[in-house]
Image 1 (cartoon, one colour):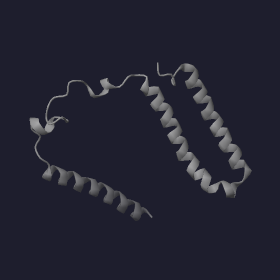
Image 2: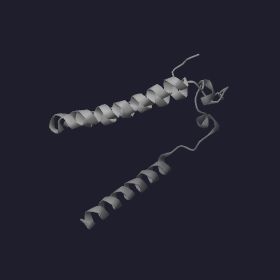
Image 3: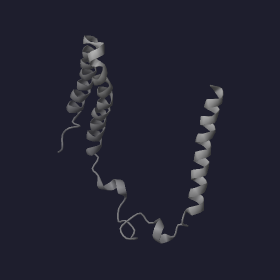
Image 4: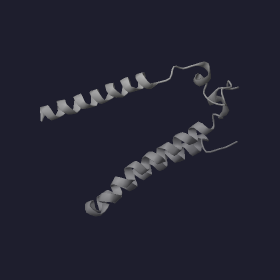
Length: 114
């Protein structure tokens, strides 16, 4: 068991070192043309984050909360038939906690656009 873990660790570290060395060997030296981010080599007129209004960020965090909810619901859906009623009750408690967060965000104005 110890030899297997040591072999996996050596393989992981060795793979990272090989990938780093291949990159260093094959990369192109940055010039002013390749170092610029986009727009055919022209310098950007504004910072990348300045284009978005601050009101979009709370809505994005709310979306991420529900996206993470789906990460928990998929494994739950695969075992709910085996576990039974207690799994359904636990999921409704979880959804109730998320609904409290939605109501709080609604009261704070995170869902208002103007």
